[in-house]
Length: 188
Image 1 (tube, helix red, strand yellow):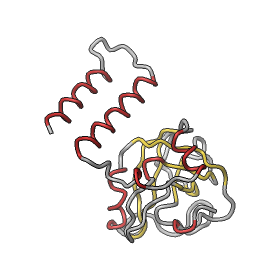
Image 2 (image 1 turned 90 degrees about the vertical axis):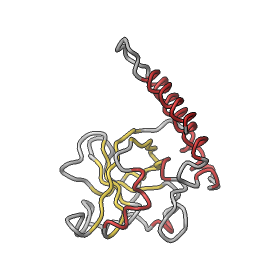
Image 3 (image 1 turned 90 degrees about the horizontal axis):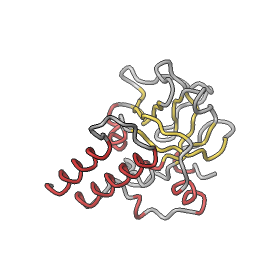
Image 4 (image 1 turned 180 degrees about the vertical axis):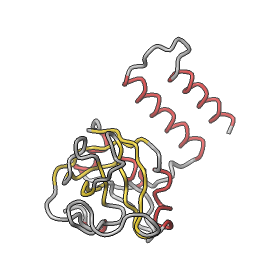
């Protein structure tokens, strides 16, 4: 625990120099990567099974490539004041697949690959493949923000709770027609 705290303090010192000078994007990415690796080493796990998920060629390229966007994520669900009805494409929102975006930043009908969700343990015990679908919008979603739809009720948010309020790396995985597929068959 002390090692992790010391590493975190060193990373913060590097990320926020006392002089107040700007930090290069590459430096920030390297610092975030080091912080993630330090957390994994200290905890013994990253909170996902991404290390054990076998990636096909497409997902491997998306995982290792530069993200098209970096966006702050929020979770939303149906019921209790959450999402109701259809998304902005007229489709029923699909749990752990539907994403609400600002269409001026991430166009609707964009198939997204979100690295941080690869290997995410789902409620049924399976793991997420990382694909999401920009099929919804929202009045509070402005700029580099996204809302991840988790399903019905607050309990549906539990598997993805660690993603709430985090900045995620998002790759453009192409376009889709129709409505988003369910998570079991999204690889089509």
